[in-house]
Length: 179
Ligand SMILES: Cc1cc2nc3c(=O)[nH]c(=O)nc-3n(C[C@H](O)[C@H](O)[C@H](O)COP(=O)(O)O)c2cc1C
Image (cartoon, rainbow, N blue to C red; front, side, top):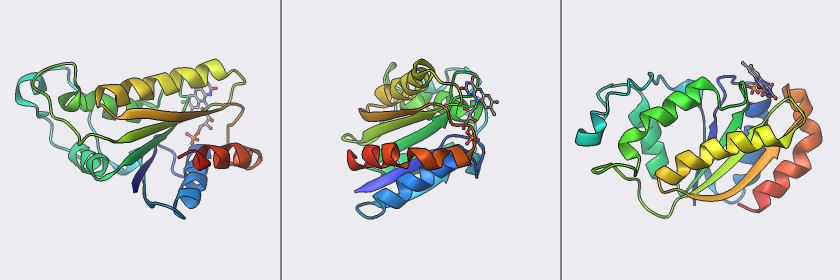
């Protein structure tokens, strides 16, 4: 099984990257894992022109297709996203918006192969799980319209820096055991 693991934060060495590394090290024992950071890619904002509703293709030419090739390659997609103002980071949201050609709310639309499983991990500094749930909902909404099956989730509160992750390794490993 092939796993695409995405650090959805623009920070390459922060708490999100630390959680992503723990998940990668755990899953590498069983699966082929490709880890990327949203900031590895140059993805412009969606212009909302809806041309893709007719053409099934975005008018902008950038790194979006590289990410979608990885989505197509993977059997399992894991998105790890911090809360930035109670939502996913803007870079990841831009990517989601640009996936409109693959979104099943309009015909015709492009489609990923069937049978992919999606997992969501949210983290935040504040103490309430409600905000993690909101992040997870955004990711699952996206998975749903790409017809990726929402399979499991993990919310981690009270994390600001990578040093805060060390006390949460058991929770992260338990999540990995369910993948
Ligand atoms: C721009 C920005 C906005 C943030 N907004 C929130 C927030 O609304 N709620 C919260 O609990 N944490 C918030 N945080 C804290 C991050 O969720 C937390 O520090 C997380 O560990 C960041 O991971 P990263 O450094 O890997 O991006 C924010 C952090 C940044 C940089």
